[in-house]
Length: 291
Image (cartoon, rainbow, N blue to C red):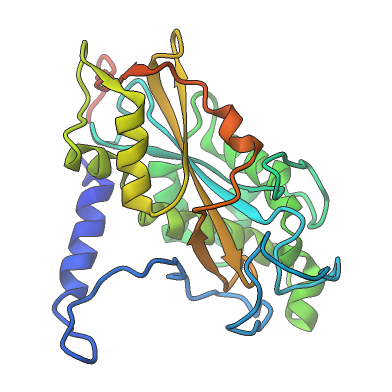
């Protein structure tokens, strides 16, 4: 069985903890997330720029250092019903990286960037073979090829992120660079959000019959991430199926910092549809699958 996301993150954290920082402190993940060293020549932005959805003055519509109008960024995950081939029993998987408007509504298929219909080929053309392998493990379609889901997510959501516009890359823009940045940033943020471990630490583990208070599940994930989390359920609204982590961003999507959203709740919170008590079901083993 392939290693889980927790094991991957644990190995990386264990390695980094061997190197003390100035002052003698061990490595600790920062409160904001900016682990991606961009492949591209994205915009160079000031460190003290405004955080998305928190500007006190109007921002120019063509700004490449301020995500607008979709300034509330959601990293969304699935808890699938069965183990995927090559996966693990504790795998949460990626759904998407969504730029909601500041009030929690959203635009879609915005054409701020070109649409692409060959995501795998674009990523591999730019040398992102390891990223494609990671996405084939953790960014999975419920039916059909994974690449169809990736195409849908970029064309529906990625094209609504203004800092990915070709003009923000200047003369260095090459077709597909915005695709690389979108998927690299989504994967990097996903790697910091081990939902299974966060719930396990709170004593919330998959069980075929047990019900957990929704408030406890939500509190565990918000304590872990430091920001708002929206939960969605299937069945009779009592089977945990999705977790949406909510962020603001300072700077561009390419090089900015993701900052957990602790304030300014919006209509995205209305999307939470779970009953007060919910089940967190174990994954099923597919018949005949070699896991």
